[in-house]
Amino acid sequence: MYFLIMKRIVVHIDMDAFFASVEQLDNPELRGKPVVVGGNPFVSRTVVSSASYEAREYGIHSAMPMRRAFKLCPSAIFVRPRFRRYEQIAQQIFSILTNYSPLVELASIDEAYIDLTGTEKLFGEPTKTAMEIKLRIRDEIGLTASVGVAPNKFLAKMASEVGKPDGFIVITPDKVREFLDPMPIEALWGIGPKSAEHIRKLGVHKVADLLPFDSETLKSMFGKAGQILYNLVRGIDEMPVEPYSPRKSISIERTFSQDLSRWETIRKALLALADKLAERMMHEKIVGRTITVRIRYHDFSTITRSKTSETPTCSPRKIYSEATKLVHPEVKGRKIRLLGIGMSNLSKASHKILSLFDSEYERDEKLLQAILKIKDKFGSDKIFRASYKEKPSRKFHKK
Image (cartoon, rainbow, N blue to C red; front, side, top):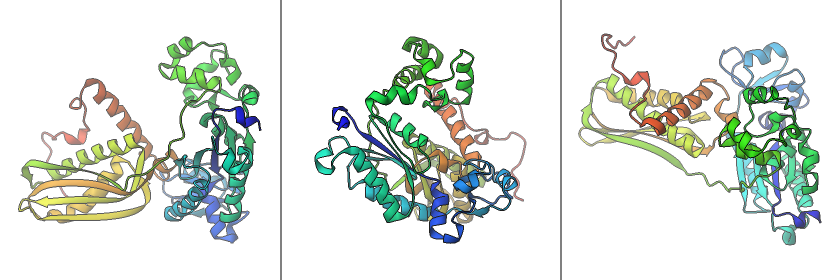
């Protein structure tokens, strides 16, 4: 009953090798074998989206280039992802979680937080409830999950990671220091490889080594994130579990002061719209699978064209590429008064999804985040892609 003295009781559920496990669930012949989910291993920029634990024994892991994975284990079974199927399973898991609390936050397609604070009278002791959830996922769906139970989201996630695969770890308030102190500094949110390398030069290797640093010192080293780091080192995290209700679609359009007729001008307009739409999607942390373009001609007649992909994205490069493919056949020499781009089949963004096949996704996100910072500081008209500029002496040629 020790949880009764806790202000919050948060559970983190992390599905084990989710995509690969779903493939093994649906195809019994894959069970016990190294399974790698991702793109074509012979295409240079495709990466691993998920690797079964049998494949991980060969050193294969998520985000690894598929070519590298093939070299490590040529006998592995390489499977293209089936996102619709993964989304179906994720929805089944979500349905189980919402039986126990309305406060369920989907952190990504394969992990979620659930706040069990105040549910004792309905379901009993929270650790037993968390175990019941884990067993229901196993028995009703056929997949294993690693579960962490703790006073906050940060500790709950760390607990589930430590317990992988198929683990169940409980961190009570009196065990926080025992759990955190021996952890490597990289385990803390916000500490990447470069930051960790910098901190190690100060003789700091474990979380316990950061305890002597006061908040002002950490803020001088990490800026505003220093205060967050100060709290995390002490096991403090006040972030609430936020239920996610995805919007059905998101779109942007522009009516032009003068009708567009040249393909180069239309292309640039689409590029600007794609960037703006991607910017909004990144702010809202959503990705989409269906892209729709809207074209209104000079005579006010309007058409829409759509395409649905298996891979969700918010990459400006991908949005622009698909939009141009949809718009180009519809130009036909007609003048265009309005252009719009929309995305639907939305889901919450996760870095696992954003970088599944093409490392360009991650570069696009970093580039756009850098652009946003510059816009915030200097104004929206101070930076634009080179593609927006007219090339002074080169003509546009179709091949």
